[in-house]
Length: 93
Image 1 (cartoon, rainbow, N blue to C red):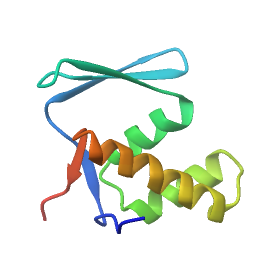
Image 2: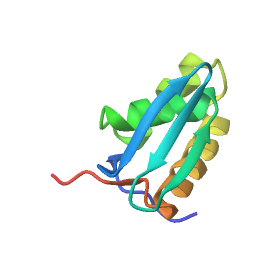
Image 3: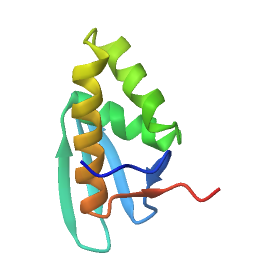
């Protein structure tokens, strides 16, 4: 898996809302909707806080009581998918 930037943030052209246990994203430029489950929505929120990827992994592992090793791979895969869909971008320092 490719190396991720240290910190990412949601792109400005993506709107998000929570509906029950799901987070719904709207890419207003592409006119596409995406639905994230509870964990994906939490990752989205933490990306909005501009936390480093490593801190997001630790937070998700703690909140969902799962091994960091397992969570690390899953979180990085999820973020890689968000990047490939142009929903998140690196934080400009």
